[in-house]
Image (cartoon, rainbow, N blue to C red):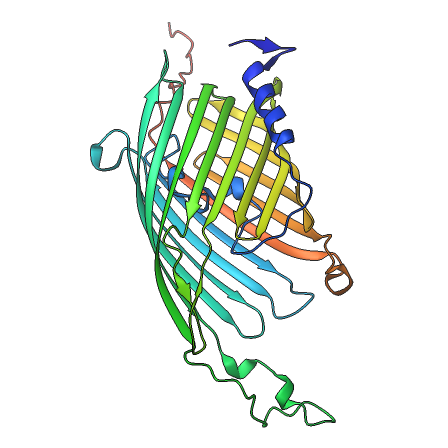
Length: 344
């Protein structure tokens, strides 16, 4: 592989592509995570089974807007298997999350199951292409009694005993949807890799409504990400990355980089600390700290709000915690023998 000043040329090409992809502004709809690099199953079914190991488990907690209103809270759990049921290339996974938002306590619970298939190619199988399909079910509910309306203002103050004048046909709505995606991976060695992924969600554009009358179709959402890793020193790796999502007239861009300092990397064990800075265009900047400890990867990030909401948020955005565990077989660690003095 050709290198320029010690940096793999393929990594430089991808970094250039990251810069070109940056739009001028963005805003967001739908659920999202700041640590998209630590939430693989949220990126789409193409990420199912894309890891070095046998099983992967992922947990996420996110809380935001505590300084503005009732906090928005998101919990998520996921698990997937590579080379599932003994079939090389087959990935199987499941993903569930619950999100509570705003005064109405809008509750969104989503469950999806999916499968993927991976093909490896190249002289030493350093390239891999994965395609996946996912079937999901989502339930939305809200509590109308927690909302307030103009009709409940009696001319002097808000009176919750007055009728709202609003008619909710139902307080919950359920829908099924279909997602697809693909991920390309290139790995030259343990510290040099490139990943490019694409996901398409809500392919069936299901309808949503809490009122009488026609439902509103949920727009299809697309997600594209590029993540790169390469060494810049004996124990230091650089990990630049970008994610772009679009849904209807809304879009979101996340761009940033992490630095990974290696504490230990031998006999299948790897321990490292990670620090990073990222930016979500027209919304927030966020800092990331992480730890890799053998099977485990932990992440902590904090969003610093920079949008028009700053007067209310006082720059406070969200805190996010992630944990990943990958189960895999490791090579046996060589035994250490202590030489004893000869006895005469």
